[in-house]
Amino acid sequence: EPEVTQTPSHQVTQMGQEVILRCVPISNHLYFYWYRQILGQKVEFLVSFYNNEISEKSEIFDDQFSVERPDGSNFTLKIRSTKLEDSAMYFCASSERRGRLTEAFFGQGTRLTVV
Amino acid sequence: AQTVTQSQPEMSVQEAETVTLSCTYDTSESNYYLFWYKQPPSRQMILVIRQEAYKQQNATENRFSVNFQKAAKSFSLKISDSQLGDTAMYFCAFMKPKGGLNRDDKIIFGKGTRLHILP
Image 1 (cartoon, each protein chain N blue to C red):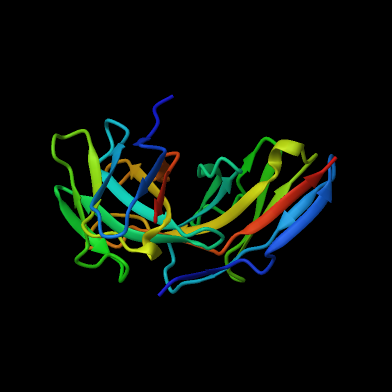
Image 2: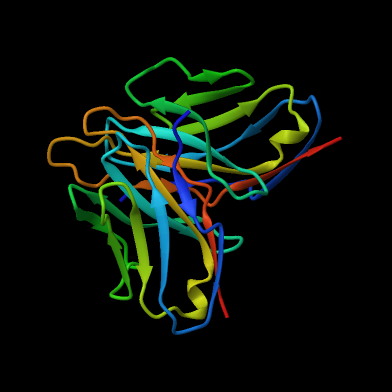
């Protein structure tokens, strides 16, 4: 069964450092998303991406965040200068093309710890 | 704006019992999708069941079923014959269908209900 794959599963970084979280969406999917979940809190939308551009972003997704699909398979989330409050579980998701919806398939998440 | 409310932060039931998790939502849309996601201790997000708002029939997936009340904007999840492996955080979620001018395709999650299945 196709699945969304995220790497690494856990990343520890120092405050102020840049991190890149990687995702390989399901191959025929065209819509991509990043969500995050601070420990014990709700899952929050960060950004959606379609046709090589951001479709929508939340207030959380400020200038420190960026997304990219560099090679047609990977979908990355970059945090330029991490803050302690960026510590969270980050989920990548993808869904099928327009008109066939369904659901978003989630990856297993990357736990980001900023120290 | 759409909102999703789960009023039960935590629940516990004995193994083999039936449990119902509540969810209400608010939207002005007539067509949309509703989901229940399960998040076990591994923290992965797993789709349990989905419901399309234009379908009157309640969705069912094995031991999982929903009670979808569109007029009341209610979408509860029933787990029958609960098993220890059902212990997890359960999120109710809402999504508008993509298409046309609608570029707002994010999923909106409730705060979750932590379910404990007791042996």
